[in-house]
Amino acid sequence: MDSESTRLLGTSQEEKKQQNWFLREFTHPTDPSTLLHRLIILFFMCTLSFGSYFCFDNPASLEGPMLKTLSIDKTRYELFYSLYSWPNVILSVIGGYLLDRVFGHRLGAVIFSSLLCIGQLIFAAGAHFGSFPVMCVGRFVFGLGGESLTVTQNTYAVIWFKGKEFSFVFGLLISVSRLGSTFNMLTLGPLFKKMVDSHFSGFTALGICLDVGLVICILSLLGAVVLGLLDKRAEKLVENRIVKSEEPIRLKDILHFPLSLWVIFFICVFYYSAVFPFISLGLVFFQQKYGEGSVLASSTNSAVYIVSAVASPFCGFVIDKTGLAIFWVLLGTLLTLAAHSMLAFTFILPLGIMILMGLSYSILASSLWPLVGYLVQENALGTAYGIMQAIQNAGLAIISIVAGVLLDQYGYLVLELFFCMCLCVTLLFCLTLYFLDLGNAGILNRTSCSKKKAERLEQVKDDLYGDREDEDEDSLRDESLRKRVLLNEK
Image (cartoon, rainbow, N blue to C red; front, top):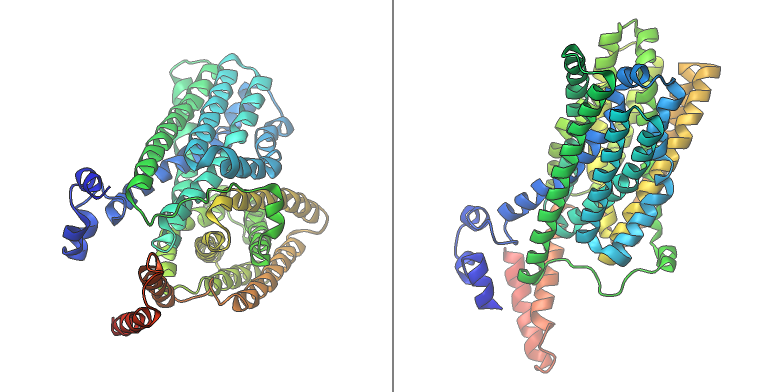
């Protein structure tokens, strides 16, 4: 195996250990244990979410053209999102379970990416032929793969980056997802107008715009294939890489998920319920309360997405360097509560408040999602993230309806108080998570230094007792003492 690894990697492990950090991490792109190779993996991971989010918001960027060309009302238009969102309250759990039990993360990524391509193909074909029912079928098929692909991407992140650039990776994935949505908003509307100005029919112009999304989905599918091949190769070469347990998960194992994991799920749903439903209703709020025009109100309302796209990787990097993940979750929640309180009771510049909300969202998302990887075995990652995604989807769907009713009957002040209440509930769950973690040796809220020290101690233990059961206990104890002394000196 050593000679085969040297042939494939281009250098032996002993030679690599003698190099300085930069040469060791950035001059061996074929070695899965190096930072450069992990960055290559990260690039292909990002392609998965870019295509998914670009196509998810196709209806938003083409709302006007769709309403006019297809001759549909707002209610039928909303089906393009409902057919995606409501089934995924259940489908993301099923997809995560199939990922763990049947497909595995490599095949799962290819299957779910293929469903995106098929769904977008049907969606675009329906536009070309002017068939609203066919387009609805396309959005449903697209939804079969969309959320499950996100679950697969999270599983890849845990397998490759847990204990390394973990929070940074989740932050970057959030950023790329937002960039996919933004790129869609900036391109498809002008492209439709250009097609119409070039004397294309409305159906043809709409179909061509959706064909662009199909091409991007195909590129994401190719990224999933390459990612699977690289992951398979790494499994053969890197002995200490995280791999899934041979025993597949069973449905009854979900009942044995730790209580801390369920608390994380509820933190997710109550926090997100105070952010995204507000953004969906915020445009008129900024116009009515602050007297902003439609263009300025739109810019203010979208500031959360823009800030999170930029700030999430940096927040993840800081969290990786400091640790204390629960502290960062608490901070993100408190800052969001402060933002909603200012929107409710003050007339402070709203753009600054929305920038604060975007920053706080970046902090919370980059610190919360990686915590799942520390609480479940690798053979249950897909199921755990699937449940988290499902609870989030269900909560957002219900809270969006409640928010609409509150707005219609009581106005924006009561709506803001409702969002503040959701964040107060989030704070209670954060405190619950903190005390539960204290009873579990504080594994979620360790500093980065204590995490590294624990990993080194575990490695020393493995080196000492892994294959040496027959040696004299006194000699093992003496050697253990010497290694601990050396470890403390480092």
